[in-house]
Amino acid sequence: MIILKKYFKGDTVIWTIAFLLLIISVPAVYSASALISHKAYQGDMHFLIKQVFAVIMASSVIYLSYKIPYKSYFAVVKILFPVALILLLITLLSGVSYNDAKRWIALPGTGIIIQTSEIAKVALIMFVAKNLAIKADKETYEKNVRKAAVASVITIGLIFPADLSSAMLIGLIIAVIFFAAGVKIKIIYKILLISVVLMIMYVLAAEVLELPGRYSTWQHRIETFFGNEESLSPDDTYQSDVSKMAIVNGGFFGKGPGNGTLRYLLPQSHSDFIFAFITEEYGLFLALFIITLYIILFYRGIRAANKSKSLFAIYLVLGFSLMIVFQAFINIGVSVGALPVTGQTLPLISMGRTSLLVTSFAVGVILNVSKYQNEKTDAGDKTE
Image (cartoon, rainbow, N blue to C red; front, side, top):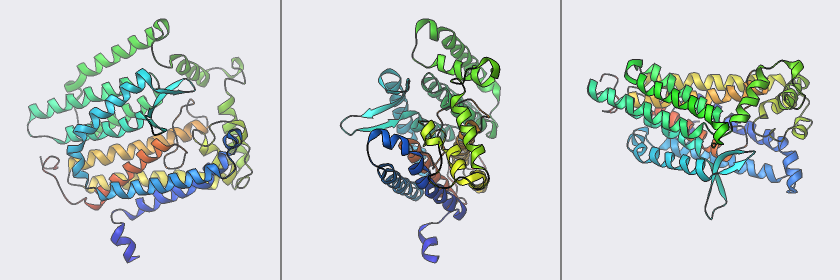
């Protein structure tokens, strides 16, 4: 135990929760991926090996980002954020498309495909945290607040044509950070007004001018969610119906590992609907346990932020904690039919390389802040 504490400092509870979620992901993804494994003729063990490797990579990312002092990101974000915007622009113009969603880019010569919105999400939180932490004087502070607001609008604007749920998630996270920082609306109201007008203009012109995006998909999913069941066809509600059926079939103790049927009915049972699949095979007990883990992870993250004396660390941890828990409950909400169908994965559990590694990075940063929570930086001291 002493040896572990030497190498794994910081919040012990967060360390434990992160590795528990990663461990849960291995049998869940392996069992849920049976259908796609069968279709690809790659053997039963292909996705098990792939997920084990992904968990090892995720664990490595958590540890590496934990070892890097969070203060170093204050300078790194100046490079990271512009790079993230460039990647988003490339994705929007010539990205890789799956199911009519252009959210990925392929790295030339590597065969690696990354979801750029995941990288941009982290980069934006870091950029906003940095700018809100600088309070040298009123004029500089208001300038940095506007800079953070413009950066947020641009990032969200580049994401939402192809990924409305991620854009809304990022918008919600940034809004909470601004609220927690005590930012006054009067400083950024013009930026917000212009962004709302531009968004409305895009939505109105999207279908007519055939602009890049998935406007028809958004409209269909929202109409399906709020529509009258009598007027909807079984095809419209198929994914949601199957997901809810799997949860009901699971009961309290589940049908047992390998006995779930959701994997044969939904192509995204290993990612978008993995919570429903876990509930079907392992029961309500494990489902509630997973929900509890996310809630505790969020609480411990906020606790670490509250104990920190650096404003940059506070906003950074707040943003990353919100990112993880909001995404988790969006995924869960979709599975139980409380939210319209989206493409949000379950953090640290769903299969998905970019999302998994980005979330692991965020967890590592939170752990690093919890390790140095009594230190302070010149730029983000609470007393400034």
